[in-house]
Amino acid sequence: MGGSVVSRVSPGDPAPDFSLEADDGSTIALSDLSGNRIVLYFYPKDDTSGCTTEACDFRDLEPDFSGAGARIIGVSPDSIASHVTFRDKHDLPFTLLSDPDHALAEAFGVWVKKKMYGREYMGVERSTFVISADGTIEKALYKVRPKGHAATVLEELASSA
Image 1 (cartoon, rainbow, N blue to C red):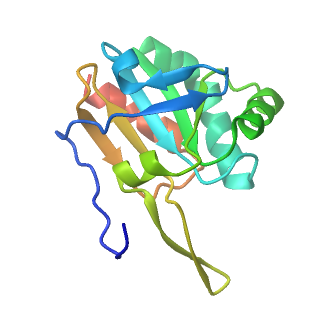
Image 2 (image 1 turned 30 degrees about the vertical axis):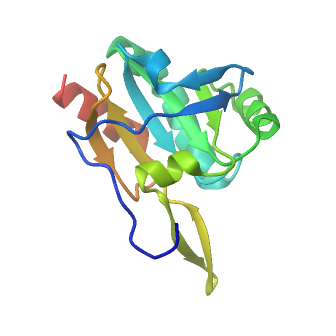
């Protein structure tokens, strides 16, 4: 899959199917989640400053997401061992999925060329998707900022409930 054209999902599209290992050792597939509204958020790396800020904001608002009928799931290329350490260190009450070959990030169009300190590399573009109970993309939020993002997603949920 070379080239620089990234195919992104948009509201109304069916969510790309997946089956990935979770931080609790189980395997979670999109089909296992049908009937639930999902907030699927992609982040670059466990325990880095921005990703920790974002995860802790989702943690602090998790009761509100649950109250809105939505389940939070985080996804990064990190290993399960890394996810377990990250989850336990920050008391994260939601599922973290390991996407080591970044197939899911690619399917959602968030595995992109990035630049840092003049160096180009491939990585996860911080993005969040709200998936409806029938598996359709409700909201697609790309290139999000970590601070305050969870509250923005919660507002989006309320506006589309």
